[in-house]
Image 1 (tube, rainbow, N blue to C red):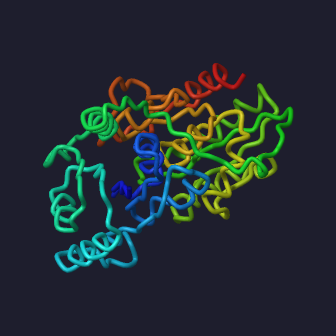
Image 2 (cartoon, helix red, strand yellow):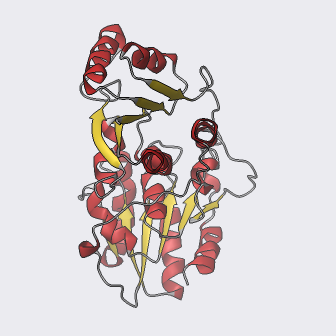
Length: 312
């Protein structure tokens, strides 16, 4: 039996979130599940040691440098490619009519999908749970785990190692370097710490990185020169992570690290779906969502209080 899962969201964190659902499908049918994903999801790195994942097919649309699957011609090309694979079942983790039509025309035997036309304000974690329970009677908890090559794991030291996920996919998610520097100061008063700085290569993220390094270079190690998968052994040995709502918050929790998630502009479901995630909300904010734009109200003292609660 050949099974495909369609995860068309572009983020690394999104791919992490969907892993437990895809793994549950694999366990149910006793076969690895192939993936149709965007290249930006880094699915190849996230699932490198995951026996439940089979072939990875790249969806070349909008955010990709190659747009072979855009438009009507692109859809026809994708139909042709899928038909050649002869999948028996497909699980579509979205509500798009486009994908329903594509896999119907590709003659996939059985199609499972979210309810159509319900993308707006959709809680895709809950929809994934509902889909697998309705169709397969599976109860799945969203607590992702990333498998590592154990030979690469290093031993711990007495020093406290803390991951700071200082990057972010958008300006409203990126907490200022001033707040992270204050947190570093508070942590070093209490503990002997070394910090790993998780960020991307965008100019905006590099400004935050460089400003932190100006005064903390000896106790900080940037991770921006590494591939995502190369950071896994380092992150897995951290005592704690403090991250913006970014890929590093999802990765660290999936690697078994208690993760403080700084929620400034996205719904809480992105920062509390795992028991290892501990969200911190901006001062004066009880409900966070898209458009809250409250990053300036994130309080370093409140973060530090959560650090004290979790680090031991």
